[in-house]
Length: 147
Image (spheres, rainbow, N blue to C red):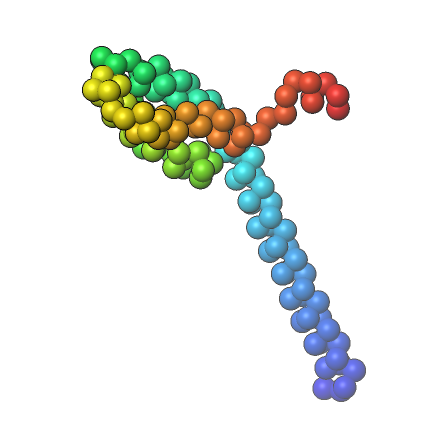
């Protein structure tokens, strides 16, 4: 085989390798994009459900009789086990801590725990709503109208 033929063969092999690599990179990018797009609706739905459950937690946790809190916490725990992977990581952990701490709150109120403990408990529950809002990151209606 002549020198020119060897150079041509090497060029063809290198060109094929580059083409194959570019095609693989593009297919991986497309696959990731399709996966992200497929879960966007589910993630938005799950964050909305988390927000509604957080509001239930707040209402039940602030009743000193604690009558509803056990059922709400069980509902949240079951929901979390089935949906946590769709949540933003910061929301995932904060929501779990929220419903776990909410279980103690009615007793803390009823038994007049020190204010610092009651406040620390509330400081775990209260910010979850704004974390969910931030994670969803939807522009306000005003921002949408401006664009």
